[in-house]
Image 1 (cartoon, rainbow, N blue to C red):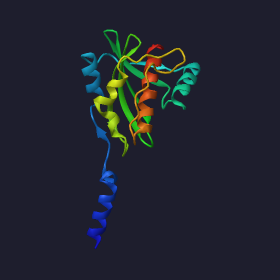
Image 2 (image 1 turned 90 degrees about the vertical axis):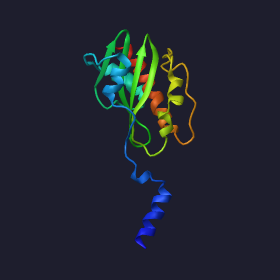
Image 3 (image 1 turned 60 degrees about the horizontal axis):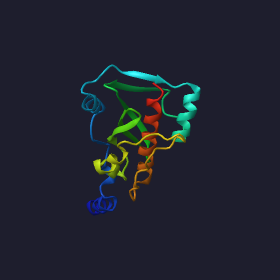
Length: 167
């Protein structure tokens, strides 16, 4: 009887009750792939003014006051995190010349919305810039069932573009 119960629970949950974080790429591998090597780590220590600007982008404070980045050949790589619905989405973003070059979901922890990790979705951020009003120049199309994850990645793209201008 217990076996039938657990089988039914597993089928109803679609296995998501047992799913853990999905690691698509280690952050160090992302930096190496994006910049050709792992340069010295640098950090932006957010001033009170900058924290206010970050709060305007994210709708809350960023989880740390110091944001690490790596730069080489005019490119800057950031490893940033934002909560989708309930869990952090770890994302690698490369900015060059005020434009997003690459967005890649490195670790996805949510039970829904994993489609944002697909290259077909993240490619939409390529060449996005930050407008004068603080919004990005192109809003990505939404994915049904992944609205909060789409918003999280959009906020992170805005944040990376903002941070690149603060170095």
